[in-house]
Length: 391
Image (cartoon, rainbow, N blue to C red; front, side, top):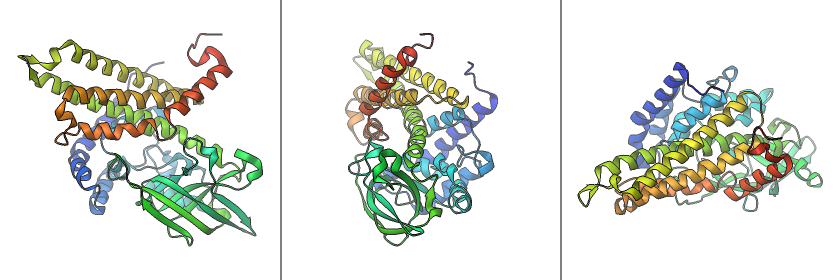
């Protein structure tokens, strides 16, 4: 396998990186202070990004997207990790691949507007009793003639305040277990659908995390995404890409940015007549961070390479979710230690990165859940999970 990047891929990375540096980075402090990205600013960065072809890059060209390969998507997702979550969403889009399951009238109503940025979508899978356990949902949708009646609630729905519609999982046949879960497209403003409170969070300021309530919401078969009973399979497929892109790749990007800042500080900060980078214990922290970032990136590129060749490296995605998230956690923790009191102070962004990093080990499946997935795969498939040359 050859992981050398083409000229076009390097140009793509450079374009995204420069856009973040010039257009997005100057907005980060204000969002952190106010917790808000003004609508006119959101529109401005969206228009600038779309003009450069940077919106919805993960979606195939035939649907109006950028048509990037999985590896190319991971390259840009790593760069997305250099900025704040809400700015990523507004500038580059959060167009979930699950919308590619739209057919017929669904394409014009939901898929095409999402890819063009005219409408924004959030996925609504999580419930108070169903976080890492995607099959544990209680929301119900029952048949009533030619309609579906949806009841239940969701929470921690990221970007819910800005979204126009939601991909919602619901149990349609309780007798069939996980095969009785279906997926629906639900527009904000549908009668019976109400938006609850914005749940306050420790970090990722500016991104809303809403409660959603469904009380006898009437839907039709046009709202059914995919086949009846195929909702959990669709949910797990979209979560795989989310874990790889929005957790693993962005974690690596955030860790890279933090380590770069830490390296500069270790050079410039002097104590006892020398830069603190000359102290061996600081050097160990810097070296360990670089080693872990490079290991995670190499694993990410290999996994993306496999997916581009039609493989389904499900266990590797779980490995990367853990590896990326926990690498980020260790890198920002070391950064906090090297920056010392200034790292803990709000005068510098290190404390923000420290807070923001903590959620990566929790959302889209906690580290412990993914370790269990990896271990079960090993027990079933043997040494192939860690030895490509094993029997």
